[in-house]
Image (cartoon, rainbow, N blue to C red):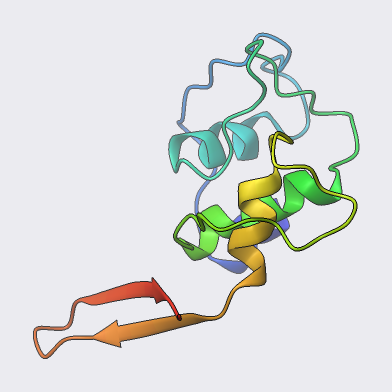
Length: 114
């Protein structure tokens, strides 16, 4: 909700599809909005788990999505992360240096620096 407010985004009028988010949940509108924007997708079982704490790995995945960071493909340089961990690619993406290329027509592209 803080992020939506900071970005001046409305949270009303959006349908959500998470089976564990009731319409009267205090954050139902914000959850529906971040889902509609593609910032958060919930868990594979169709749940959002709105009353659980966000893990560090989940926070990294959300921030990568918000910042539209490209997915890194090299190995993870962290001792406590295995290649098969669902968040390993997100951690790697957040760990590399990016280069933003801006074109004369106003468009831009983000690339991982070699």
